[in-house]
Length: 106
Image 1: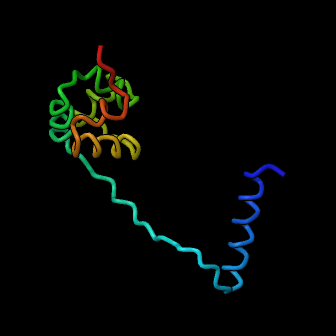
Image 2: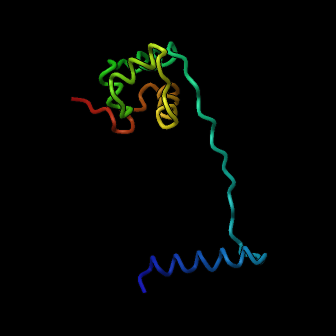
């Protein structure tokens, strides 16, 4: 049996033991996910300009259309969950797109 299968079986057996209340020695880490930020049109534009990107480049980095960026910045629509997460990352770190290899230097 391949090693990966052995690892999966060992993990499953450990989970069964945990469910049965047996001490397994496993360390369980609880994690909390940060809330999604909400953005006003002005904040979206500030995030974009803080990155030094045009609407076209910003849209390509986030994976949406230029029309979406225009609508967000104009207050006609709002970004959805994944876009809000990326906006939050870019707000915190204006160089996020470069650091993650999304925005490439030429």
